Image (cartoon, rainbow, N blue to C red; front, side):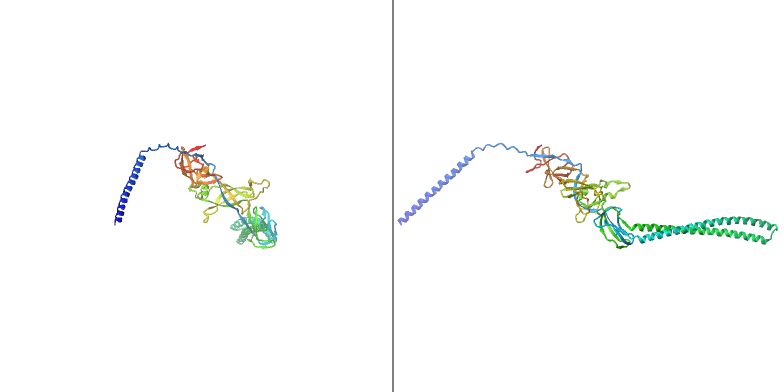
Amino acid sequence: MAENSEKNECRKGWTGRGFVFRLVISCLILGFAVSGAILLGSAKAPEQKMGTPQIIPTVQIEEIFEQKDGLTFKIDGTVVPFREVPIASEVSGKIAFLSPQCRVGRYVQKGEVLMKMDPTDYELELAQAQQEVIQAARSVEELAVNITNARAELEIAQKQQEVQQREVQRVRGLAENGAISQTELDSTLLTALEKRDAVQTLMNQIRTYETQRERLVASRTLAEVQVRKAKVNLERCTILAPLDGVVVELQVEEDKFVQRGESLVSIHDTSRLEVQCSLYMKHVEWLWSTRAGEEVPGGKDVRNYYQFRPTPVTIVYRLGNTEYAWKGTLEYLDGPGLDARTRMLPCRVVVQDPLDVQAIQTGDEGFQATPSLLPGMFVEVRVHVVPRCTLLNMSEMAILPGGTVWKVVDGRMKRVQITTAQSENGRVLVYAKPGVMEAGDRVIVSPLASPLEDAQVEVVQ
């Protein structure tokens, strides 16, 4: 019991000392906190440093200018024949001669003999027609002699009639005086009637001769027509090349009998060629004639809304290291409208002289050919136009993605959006916009890290 009492007293003593110790520690922590707050509150604020000077970026600029001499755009094309002329037989007969030049791929000149047909039948027809003309001419001559003779006889008969009329007058006077009988008077009157009948008969005969002459003259004319026809058929037995060109198809051979109208040979005209190509609508806009809205007497010319003025172009064909050029003209549309598949406008370029070729670029001076423009060639068509809209020329370095251009106005950057017309060889043609992008504006061509609208810049010359 005594031991337990001592243990309880000891616990009570340690408990009192622990409370005092925790109280002292808490007071010390609180004192340190208050002291730190006082020290921090009484500390001086650090001196404020001077502001950093603003950095002005340095840029390079270019002054854009108006493209007054137009632009040149390139499209692909295919050379096609200007026309293909099929030659058919105009007479029937056997082919007696076929020229060695009348073969597929051979070049023929206008007027050159291609083939000949057997002319025997047509020579006989010509001889027969000539004889018919001679016979008709002889008949006309004979009839002319008959008419001359009949007119001479008529003249004699008319004189006899006049004499007989005077005799009738004399006999009638005698009969009235009773010098002759009525029988003698009647005999004289009867003779006068016979003379009158003879005159009338000759006049009727002459009119008949005149009618016969018209018929014989018509027969002679018909015989002369038959002669001309026989001569034409005889000439048609010789088939001549109607134009300069290349034989592309031959349907007959020597000794073959052909009928009239049967196809013989086909020739491509090489005196001029055409290039078939297609235009985008922006090209058509450049090419569209200013005449489309012009007035003509009596109203507008509707044709100008479906065509444009002939535009000179250059046809280029590359062979090895050499480019060959021909002059052509973009003249007309090749169809009623846009192609439904490509949404492009077909058109035709006419090359008036396919042999007028010029080498515009030669990589090997040791070898240079002189090719001719041939159907089927794939060529490049270079079209030079001066569109109605104003175009500006600038460096492609000035254009950022999305068609953004930064220009410098009074030392500050201005952002504008442009529309590109054409880009080639590091230069870009854009459409001018009044008040936005015009000739004389200065645009930034140097790289920009973080461009800002209305930011101040320093220009480097």
